[in-house]
Amino acid sequence: MHEWLPSGVDELEQAAWAAVRASHSACVIAGPGAGKTELLAQRATFLLETGQCPSPSRILAISFKRDAAENLQARVEKRCPPHLSRRFTSVTFDAFTKSIVDRFAPTLPARWRLPNGYGDIAVITKADVKGFLSRHTNSAKWGRAIATIDPATFESTVLGQWRLPVEKSISQSVDEFAADWWWFDQLRNRAPEPANLSFTMLNRLAELILRHNPLLLRALRHTYPYVFIDECQDTSFAQYDFLLSVFGTDGVCVTAVGDDKQRIMGWAGAVPDVFAMLGKDFGAGRTQLLCNYRSSPELVRIQHVLAQALDSSVEAVQSHQIAAIDVRDAARIWYIDSMQNEAQYIAEHVSEDMIRRTLRPRDYGLLVRQRAEDFEPLLANEFAKVGLRVRNEAQRIGRTTLQDLVVEPLVGLYLGLLRLATRKRDRDTWVAVAETMRHLRGDYPDADTPSPALGRQVAAFVRDLRTHLSSTPVGARACEILLTKIDEFVDLRSVARAFPMYRSGDALAIAREAMRLHLAKSANSCQAWAEALDAFEGTHCVPLMTVHKSKGLEFDTMVMIGLDDKTWWSYTPDNPEGLATFFVAVSRAKQRIVITHCSQRGTRAQVAPLFDLLRTAGVTETDLAVPALSRT
Ligand SMILES: Nc1ncnc2c1ncn2[C@@H]1O[C@H](COP(=O)(O)OP(=O)(O)OP(=O)(O)O)[C@@H](O)[C@H]1O
Image (cartoon, rainbow, N blue to C red; front, side, top):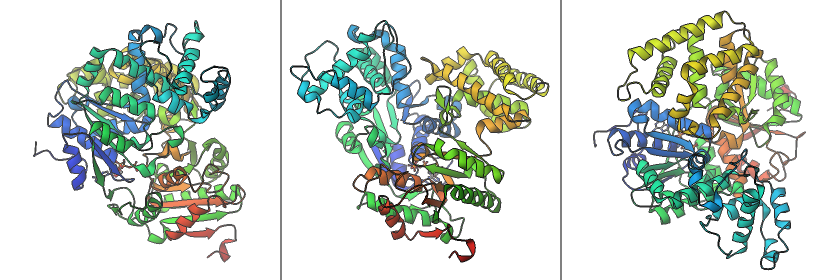
């Protein structure tokens, strides 16, 4: 065991090294870019390669976003041979709890069964809760207390913290009374309509299923003796309670990584002191990391000023990234008078910088506080003038979003096959496609490479696809035929069997439909199939997204558009979540941050403390509203 060495990274700091090899539950708390996700990938590799997690046991990794889950899975697949990485399951919390309900709902106690299934995942709004609460104010016992429930936190705290009782029981508090009635309205009272369930409610049902079925619970714990939680600071009350109920036992080793300073989901009901609770309930020791592998020394210095404002006791971290630009260019505020000029300056700056430093469009991230769609038209227009495209990664495609769609394993396989058909000698894609096909066909599960017969089959299909593409004009109408051809070759039933997230429910159908819609849209504007695939993946597009969606991602240059009172309307100096959101945005950059303030959009009275912090960190402001010649 002592001979095991990390792969893919040159070094691990001492504390990370210990956490990778720990035999007990642990919380790894560290700032941005400290390599927390990387640590989980290394720990998985260590557990699988050294036999600490022997076959058939598996590792369960839980993330909060699809791209984070896929990113972690990809890192483990890169570091571990396939027969080992197959025992690593990386999923989102919601997908995991939903899959338990989808598979085991018939085992629910009679009172909680779903005889008519459930419809599209419900989003519970404040108005829904207000309406519901107002209907119950006439309860003799709880009518008055009902008025004290906050509609904004009803789902996260009232529904999220209530463990569903197996049998009907007398409510002991107004919260129990309200939660019980809510469930009655959304489940039993709707028959014969399907139940109306949110992810929080699915979580509660999943917890009940496992609590009510000791054999199933034991099997799950046996399957997953190691559980990882990424971005643990985002764990909601329901999710924490699920972890405690299902994995809070001897024999399950939990590794949680996160950063309190990046806690930006409090508004959605994230537990305030999750690391302390993990310490108490899981006996998880604390480890701190003090490196930053992402950002240049100058950016790490600026981040530290913000970090101190969030936590005065925070220790300084050390950058392990080399500065690629002049230190004076690392951080700038741009003051601009109109939104039109703002979009133009950003587009021109990105275009010039990209050429000068030979970077690619995806090395830049355009971040906004909310509603990326409002910023998109103007930016798209100005970027088009410099020959670049902007893509709103949060846009909806069918029943999912673009950001989630592009990381679907189904999309990885289909795009891979199409890529192979449009270009020759792409070894990485060939290896990835062959590996997935091997997984689907159950071919040579213990060998390192696919069998020659499977290799020939894939090669023949790719040749066939190439011939088809060369005689088919690019366009939306050809896409369905193309995808159907691939459906037949890969066999969608085996895709459903091979990937845990597609085993139950409608996730596969959602991904397949969104892939068709997005491929058709991409093909519509292109002359060649290779171009359409680039458009699908956004290879030549500068990504635009909200700060929340940028969590876990990194860019050479982060441009934060619109630091003003209107865009940051929810920011107040006494609520650390606003500053944490700003901190997340700033910490996505490797080399450079640009922050714009446009007076046409809003004033800067309320957000003045953020400007003050930037000033304290020595970030200078350039007035781009004055003609270039008189600018300092
Ligand atoms: N030990 C290491 N050596 C070299 N590079 C590393 C190491 N660990 C991580 N990195 C690189 O540093 C960057 C940040 O790593 P990672 O995403 O794991 O950080 P994180 O702590 O999860 O960040 P955040 O909380 O900001 O999302 C990545 O590009 C990763 O490849």
